[in-house]
Image 1 (spheres, rainbow, N blue to C red):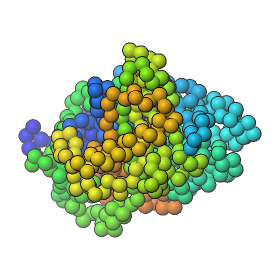
Image 2: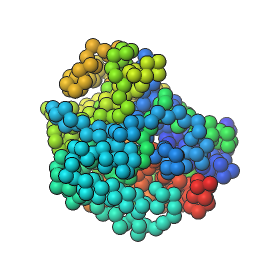
Image 3: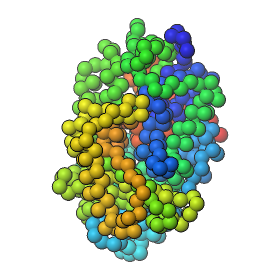
Image 4: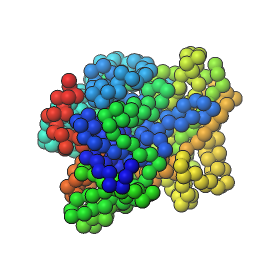
Length: 504
């Protein structure tokens, strides 16, 4: 590529939002270039292998991919839906919720009516409350037009955006156990009591109630097929290439300067990176100091520790649901755990052995971890393409935490003991290095119902030819990021036009 090569669209960051925006715009005949600092594209869709078994780094299952559902229609339009191999979760329990030492596991089921039916035996006096919960979840979705693939205005969202999650659930039922079951899988959005809006919970949860699937052999298939689709429409992807600066000339961005001193010129730029990371590579008077201060001081969602296990064949029975365990009866305790009480929660994700389908070939365990626990090693970087050893004390920390977590999981899953062939752990630093989110935040900026304008990031910026996309804009998750990519692209090609295309 020559230095004066100019594109219609330059996308910084090849996460889902960047790739999907790129595909949408390339399909409209635009010349698109995506620049990615990592070897692997996909951002949170990245996968890796241990003992030749594929593991997801972040996205272990996806909601809304069922026939006719919103994400299915967006992916169909993008040209990748028919290429994805999906395994469906148990229709009567995509997730199960457990507490402390009690053996009961409460099912969260697919299908709006079925959701109520499966919970009723555990809460026979709460039928009205569960039905009201489903009604409110659906009503909230109806107030977010793009989630229904239609145009709307901000007033629709405003009607439900001010509801705080825990307070809204309390109004539905005074049964504290049911309250905690309904929010028991809050690791899907890393909610914080008194701050998280109900719509965040509702939109995420509704997608899984509609349909729950695992992408086989891993979520990186999504980014792989989007990359292929982009290339088919003449787009370029530059990997192992960090953008060190977005250079402004005469009030608009002119080019992206890369780590190998190359200039990638563009008419329009789309940033698919954390806003804090974006501000570090832009020097523009159009971005005021007050905005920089606001972004740099926003609270991030909590990070996590992940332990990935390769299992002895034919030993651990396959489960077609995920298990969310909380140490106490109050699921919100986990996000504010003290170090002495770790792990305060965990989630189990099973992967099926295709040669022996009754059994799992691997297991991923995810639990909250504060960035403070690894802050002493924050000056180190270790990722593919930029490999460094963080030191023996860091390795010792990971081993100790892995053993601590395993001992807790053995209490509920004793069959696991003695049946682990290999294991690999990841900490908040791993998430930070691979996703470029400050403090390895699971879902970027924490949405705060008390500070809606401060914690909501718009697709447009003060720089006329710079748009934003990704999990910090609107909503995180595969569905949320895909809808944001539609909104970002619509700024350039029109919302009516793109919705007509998606609805076919």
